[in-house]
Length: 222
Ligand code: CTP
Ligand code: CA
Image 1 (cartoon, helix red, strand yellow):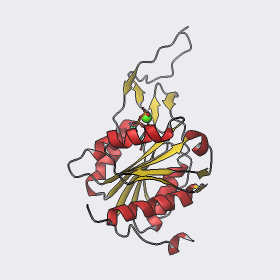
Image 2 (cartoon, rainbow, N blue to C red; image 1 turned 135 degrees about the horizontal axis):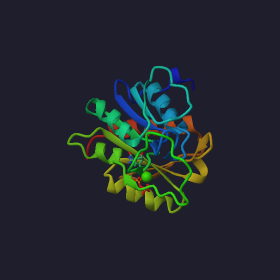
Image 3 (cartoon, helix red, strand yellow; image 1 turned 90 degrees about the vertical axis):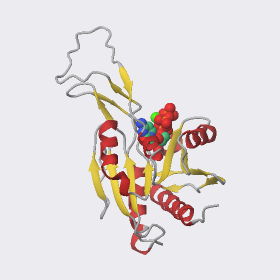
Image 4 (cartoon, protein in one colour; image 1 turned 180 degrees about the vertical axis):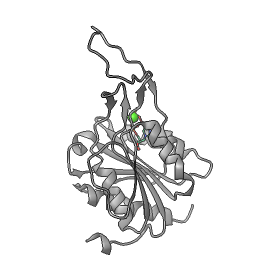
């Protein structure tokens, strides 16, 4: 189905999505980052827009076009991403953390390019804030959705993450399936159990995830 004719389970809702990697600067030209194309997060922005939502997309450095009608904020580091999220999190109905946020940043950042004059170069790293965990622990949090890309023990690690961050919903995927790929095979985890999605392109996976979010948000509290 063309986007325009999609069902509208998120009509009128405000949805914020983080996408892509973050880049943690070491010096003027170098930094550490995570491997992430941003395709899954951008597909979700498209799917949420087509489902009737007003979408804010907070993107780390990626080379992808902005989906039509989506408000995009470009950021570099995890700290920038957290600031952008905090800028309007209080008005959001849904928060989906798809970004591959770097867990650490260099303790020291050098203004100028380092010269290769050291035999051993040590870079001390300090932890980054956990953006999703921050949002999920707000006094009145939006409906929070996490992603977990794992290379092993997928379902155990993913369910542990969901519980630790107290998320109603988490999408798990194997790194080996998702990375450098246009398709994906998500497994959704919620309080009711596991919901594997049939393997398909990332936009189709995103539409199924959005439908699932809409269903959970409409459900009567128990
Ligand atoms: N996340 C985040 N901010 C961070 C780290 C992660 O918002 N600093 C979000 C991701 O966007 C994702 C979820 O948390 O939705 C899980 O990220 P992941 O890296 O898989 O889990 P971590 O909690 O960082 O644990 P670890 O890397 O040790 O597996
Ligand atoms: Ca991490």
